[in-house]
Length: 243
Image 1 (cartoon, rainbow, N blue to C red):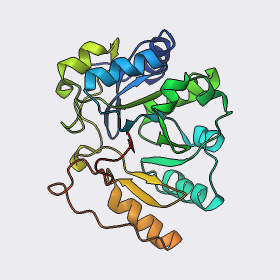
Image 2 (image 1 turned 30 degrees about the vertical axis):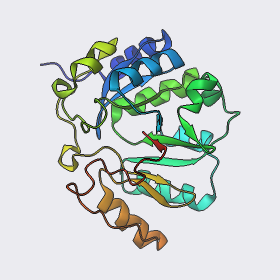
Image 3 (image 1 turned 180 degrees about the vertical axis):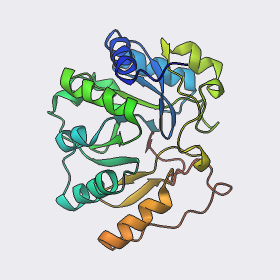
Image 4 (image 1 turned 120 degrees about the vertical axis):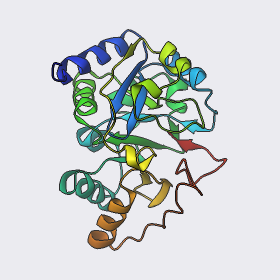
């Protein structure tokens, strides 16, 4: 079996997204769906049966975060510690620069479905494929937005074959890299607002993120009530939440 073609697969995803399509692709925290325009994102939304209170996340990188987020220095230092020093996946929420070319390239309706009260979630450090996709996206000013590749309420999928038929049928391209790295957590990425330090979703590597922020920044994140009590990890039940 040949090795993974990460650069080639990233190029294929960008080409499909640029043409208005939807892709399902692997990240370390599960399979995700991605689009780059309102029509594609709405098609994916409908396939998921997703509630209108949910928000898409931008698929990005530390470089995209540096350019797009507009947050205090302390929040940036926390994110750099998690990503650079400890190599942990994170969905970082913070105020964003609406005049940056990436969010500006998204139609107003799609941007509204991906932001909340002037904040934007950026997923980063979730694998080599997503990192290369983010590099191309920044270089080519092609926004990448999406959410987990699953029917709403059914949990993150960590194998491509577990992604349900309506999601696969919606996608113009499905990339299968097998079982994903952080499958033992049975949740997607941990999501934190780095301005308010609110934990919006408890997810992969949460206990490691807790430890880093406690030791380096004297920040005490709330305890994880456990999978049985909070299977999705979302802490804002019934409210508008990012992906």
